[in-house]
Image 1 (cartoon, rainbow, N blue to C red):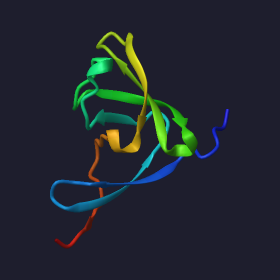
Image 2: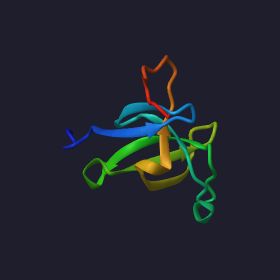
Image 3: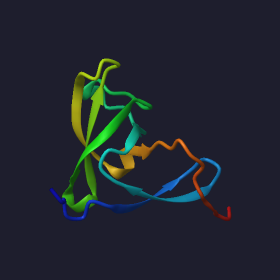
Image 4: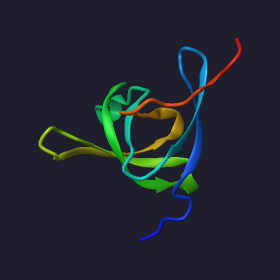
Length: 96
């Protein structure tokens, strides 16, 4: 099944003042950048994008334990998550 608008360009700012343009897509591994105490989720917890919402402005992220059992699935905005990388990411220097 093809999901329309499955890719969305999001600009994230790293602490080193580097600008990284990111395409968030299905099955990306992401980390929370905020605390969500009402969901018992905390900054840094890792989940997987399982659905694209609101035309690519939000994402359903599933959080699982080490055995693969889902303990939370929640819709998140792009400013609440960051994509995790296993390989080097190219970034453009941003002047201060």
